[in-house]
Image 1: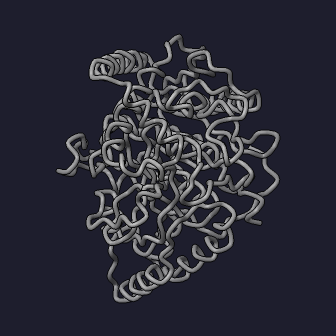
Image 2: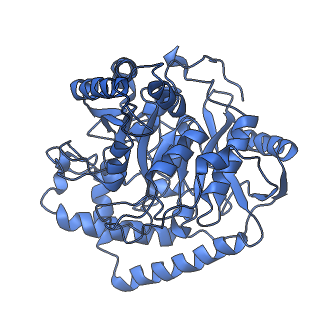
Length: 476
């Protein structure tokens, strides 16, 4: 992996930060101060954060430092600051959901993932930007300002967990939380050059209820694979509020990352559904796959899969779920909505019950096709995104003709959302740079409930091709 800016980052990764605070080598106050300085310096350009809790975060950090001096630790993340995607319910803290209709919304209850983060000792330093109700894969926002890519601020960061990805890539926080209903941690993870895993459906419980609950996942965005594994160890497990939540895991995924990689059967599909892939991305991914094949204990097969695109299925489920639910709730506030989201609500009016049930049947058929592949392989790898980041004020690349679809973003992200339909764990991991210095993501998909396999493989790949020593030039 090559890039001109190679520095030792001053902002520690999550595992380093948590260990240094626990051992008294770094104070929580000093770490929070470093985060606030980075936010002050770069947020006006990058638009990662909406609300930032300067005073409260410093007070929480001081309390954590005092408790540590007394031999008391709140948990494994004692005193570590986090960014929180502004879709998650946070008790007493404004949750706009990226919408002008939500600027006064202050929940009285934490989402399960927030409860668990706090129980582990973390500090919420601020709420990170998202597209309106997380509807788009770009970073267009009328609430926060368009999210901008730390590697080139003229370009999109990707979304909808735009602010969380930016905040981690720009070293504003050691880690952040996001959500993924069609690629919303993997898209910005790939564009911003960080790691993000969408786990199996229900691995981390979600609440309040979502009209696209069969697609929606909660999870972290991190600089390293092992940071992500630690957070899944802490945040996973059942919760009575989420009927889809999975039972508790029976092993530590962080420990799995430190174990030697066993021989794995890996299939490489350089594209899906016949989608053209940008040549710089294709070359970068091809080189990474070749290096993996020569250095890791894998049996590699490579050919494009002959699956038929389930775009119409995804469009019906996404538009029907979000459009009907939000259309009913916001019918008196349509003028305040992002025009693209308002159009989605209008599209939803054309979807009837028969259409929706047909899409559910089609989803089951596609998922079965995906699961059948994993009877023969352990992992599937693809490019994460077939296009390079485009202008930050756009919803889609300039050369993408408007099809009239309510999910235009799904047309330039055809490798991410299919695995929301199937429920498989899917991660994006940096695998190199384009000639222009933009990160490229490799997507690693595992069989259902086999996140540990995905993480272990990605940890081995990270050791072979480390990327965290690279950082955007604007941070120099």
